[in-house]
Image 1 (cartoon, rainbow, N blue to C red):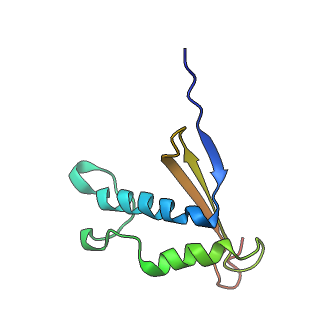
Image 2: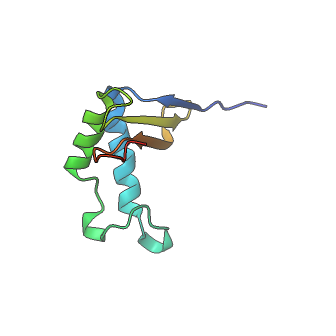
Image 3: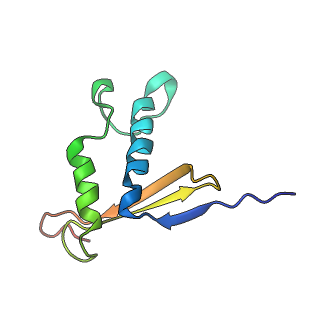
Length: 98
């Protein structure tokens, strides 16, 4: 019996493009042919906005604890294919950093 090992890891900034490709894939399928909504966006807007990509990039360089920080983890299989991801961030509005 072969055991397939998957990995969950904090991404490096150089891996952001992989996350963006994965997110755009999910967004393009959102609500199509009975697939549950991934984001409440119109079919025409089912793409990660450029400002959101910039927010991800900028947030990775901000130390945790400062407004605007972001960290992203991804689950990958043995072929480095993304199985899923999660991202945590601190909003920049006062009193929303928790």
